[in-house]
Image 1 (tube, helix red, strand yellow):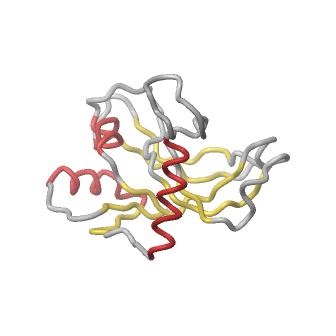
Image 2 (spheres, rainbow, N blue to C red):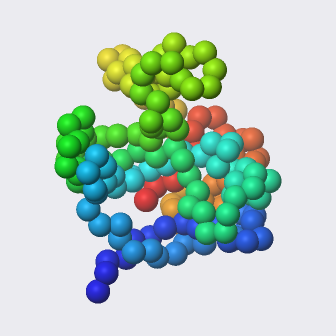
Length: 159
């Protein structure tokens, strides 16, 4: 029997009432050059809201939420930058690590900026302001709270 994990998926017709908590097969161990991360929390952003609310086009069954933080559970062959137990955050541009980007005139790419930013936060003890935290099953309520504009700081979802 294959292990199952909880996941959120968007269902057509898209909208906050069609976010479903489902189960999916456990992805297994990471392949060469990959890591497996146990997501602990995610914070809302406007892009994720637009996808979940249905005004940014997406495919049926999409798993929302792109801003995540978690702990490395396993590393694949050849991975040297991460080890089991490392705290990690997601990045929007994982393959642009250094050098000029293919589009635009970036001298230092998003991956490098993010690493510098995280180091600066850690060195100075900066912690994010978290306004409110919701359970995974309350993602639609979290987005409705974001819609209200009443928050100050991050709105987070815990897994």
